[in-house]
Picture 1: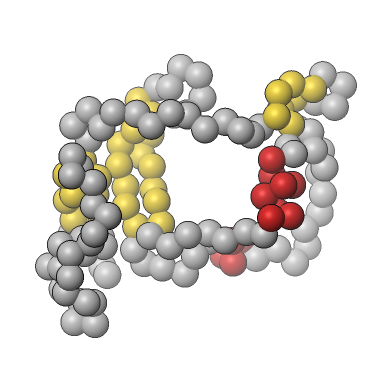
Picture 2: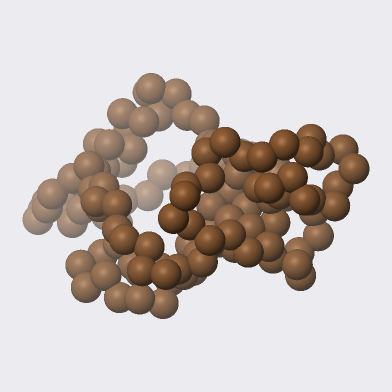
Length: 127
């Protein structure tokens, strides 16, 4: 299964197992990555990585755009250069400054917080 429109049954797939088990996340308003790069996308980033094997990564990199009869470019690599923040705010329910309300959370500053970012808690979400 390499091209658009091809199917492969996955009878035992549990989609919940594909994402990390976490309540922590970051969100920010941005733009789509497809040409046109229109604004109006809310990006959601989990605060835990998704792990995959080298074999799985190779399979993902082998995916092609287009049909088998009219193949186009590979889906990857399709990384877009890092864009300017343009005053965007990154919202999070993860305590990045040690002020979180969870008593089990360690009270220390996050060492990797970018200097030019502004963080604002999502107070409507529970930790």
